[in-house]
Image (cartoon, rainbow, N blue to C red; front, side):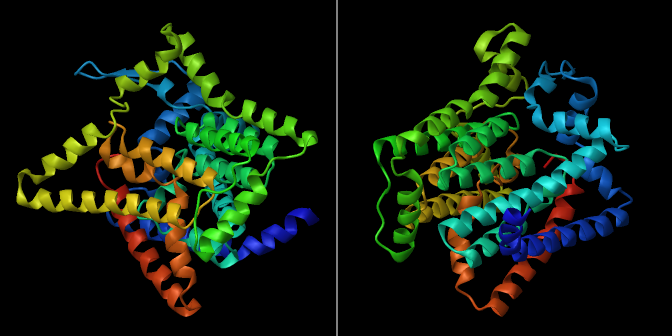
Length: 398
């Protein structure tokens, strides 16, 4: 407990700030939903993907819906860790599956916030860590962090796996990557980060350039975390790398076996949901279609600006010398989110685990006086809370 107390005290400002922002979002959602005659709790726990997860927890796999157009929505598309946790909590408590999903998400969101702080604090400093957590909390789609979805759980596992990589804890990194791979398909991004870090460590690669003071500091972190390790520790690195892909690979192969379609069976399941990876062609077509009329053209411009901002933040992260595992992880998450032919309204929440995109903004925010940064975060938090309530009370899934 003593070993945990010091890191917890160091992260306390970030965690308290995060809890305050999320509490604001939930209060605004409750008021907005009540005004519309809806239940905020139902919106958080019993709609869209949350229902699919609770069905898996309750009934197991095998449930599917056949749509009039011939599409088949199978619950095999949903990875099992969140339903397993819902089922386990249901077994040892009076909570329903939906209640359990909500509790898991709340706890996981705090773990994710702590993990984001740990990464940013390790790479930069405590102030940047606090700012990074607050920026993650005030994302426009931050309300998803409180839903019975798997984003918070995945982000927590990913952040702590990356922290373990950066601090040379290979077994922990590989184990957390395994569980991340059981949470969402994008768990491959965590696996890639672990493997790139491991290969870099073996090859003695420790820097990807950078001349600024920020880059020099991040380069020092890379030097410390990916430098060749003594022989006594090599087996830990090898075992961590071996463990990392087992979660995602195991589930995908199990789905292939269950469907009788072999290793690519999971891709057929996703195709039934019209999900796939086309390099961004479908998304580009979707954006282009917005320019057929004046009102929708404004939305098209907004989408282009949003994508441009995401790309810009990634490029700035490269220039500032973010550690290689972070860049690999963020790049894979971003590519899968933007280049998938999935429901386009979900892309903002699919980008939410790419928390390292926020580090350049966190650095800028950390340079402001505390009073000014508090006003900035407070204002954005209110806008985010209102937008989250509006968005979640809409007709489509987030």
